[in-house]
Image (cartoon, rainbow, N blue to C red; front, side, top):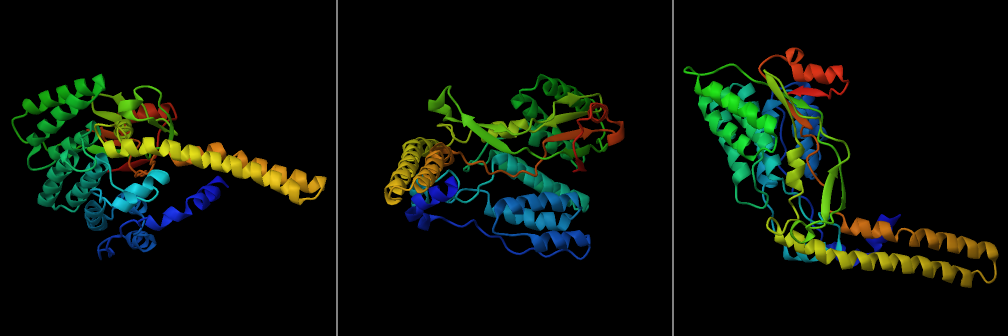
Length: 379
């Protein structure tokens, strides 16, 4: 109900809303499984998150030609923010993200490039795969709207480089992952891996087994009460916890919680100052919307009693309806102040990398023993 009340109250501003960008139609490859064509036929190309989730599904069903086509189109469309004065001004009267096009986070761009590189590799187009691997790192470091690297994608890129024609290139990716990771276990494990690479005289062609564990959890938000001047007043939290970190002699399970940390940077003054400023402007706007809802509900109750002309039942019903509307004022405020929670939710909740098959990896066997194993797809 409060969504309807909210939309009515800001109807004059809706003319400025922008539609999400569209991408060109992608045709199924003649050598691809029949399921690939079904995914593409059902795809709504005007919905960015549906496009990204479809790319994940296409990869899981070995639709590598389609992943490359659709992935490269998505890279171009959702890579950077396109500013519109009208949209930026009117966005302070609306929940964040409701009238702005979706822009991928840097970790999403890098993971998308990894899927494209892996698709080329699975199609035995190794040179194209290595080109995409270099692009994946550049995607994280690019000085555009969302930027910054993360240890998860760096580990994925390092493992893929070890299977390339230049396996020693992986060293720099391993080192960078160790530098920025906050997990001591991962740092130690990476240092031992680098030592193994340094002691190897011949090209290492032992492939890594890479698995996607589960899907990224849904998100909720709460008010942040510490250091709000620099970080903003939002704190994003997962609806379900990520799997715990695990390491063995042959592999590692890495939760993708650093990607949530990356999303929590959105409203920092030194990252997106305009976004931070708009979030603070939205506070009095939300309070006005909430107060208007409260007054509208109270007025409806009083007016209903007046118009009922002494009918107790009519007055009670008016007060009940008016009270229900007034009671939604808190929801209207929360709805107005809510951060942009959009994200690619079919990325992994964790990744498993191992030198041995899944049924021999100790970390995964521990999950099975504890009955906490997630849905597994090989990447």
